[in-house]
Length: 430
Image (cartoon, rainbow, N blue to C red):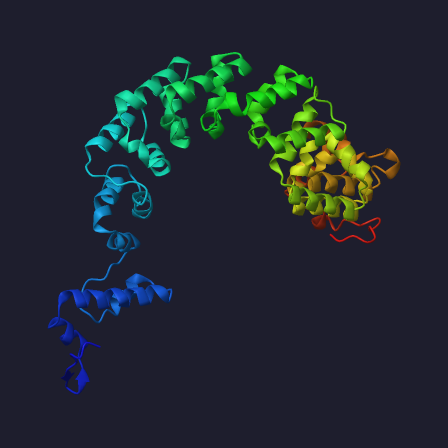
């Protein structure tokens, strides 16, 4: 390639060329050789076995990463690896966002975090998510925030856990964000203890938004509709997307839920709002299409929403699977499922199929019959204890395998049975 090839006993000796050439040329060729092996999906270790260049090949992914790091980033990468516990790959990525000139300032931050109870993995997580904190002044910037959160009841151990997951807490202004948001949350939850409970849930929104500006007007609107104060705590602790969505979408969803007949004074209103705030319009339409193809009318859809709004959070695949089993295998009419939409919220494999298997066995043995009025609600919703008492314990002497069937340790196939569809819906796919 460089016009420097020689013959050695009739054969061209590339190694001989490299030994008499510039070392950087040799390393460049070796690097290209390594890249060729990687591009072919072969292991770097194997490349070393066939190395014709007589120069060192990088043998690990970490060494390859270090080789590709520009010189001006090498100190930053080295520091992130050795002092913050990041992997070389993550360190290289983080080094694209921050550049360290010396270790003095970041050392003081790492030392401060360790003194406040942060362990190595928590420090690594925090630095990976918000590396700018390495430039913070521990005494002037970080300590006041930690002490404020300590003052309302958060322990150092809790803060290490929460702040490593939500480093924005340490990056926000104490006077302009943390304290105002705390006061707002306390006005909703009524005590420091309840505010800390929400903090432990590691809700990013707590300190990423100006709550007084973004959330308070929406709660005021819901209050004017008659929503009780207790439901505000439910929204902020469990369903914050309701009040964190864009204003136009929020007001549109409120009108939609009211139009469906939900009462703002009831918890069902909150649950339905959560469904609309977490599901896009296209996804919602797709799920409604599934319901209609399985025979549900618009009234069935509204009925199911009123009984259990969160059923619509089930995936399209889950909706189809539950319909297919309950309709085609067990024989329930689709409209009957609209009265028990919570069926879509339970595990098909761990709850519905084992319970239906028990019923199938009892029917096959003549221990119960269709006149016994086996309601889907009693089959799906009943607690384990009540279901066991009603359908398992009293028949155990007749069918000793019932308990294993209930716990999913056996299938009805092992007893020579199968689910027999009593009718199949027309014009629908499953």
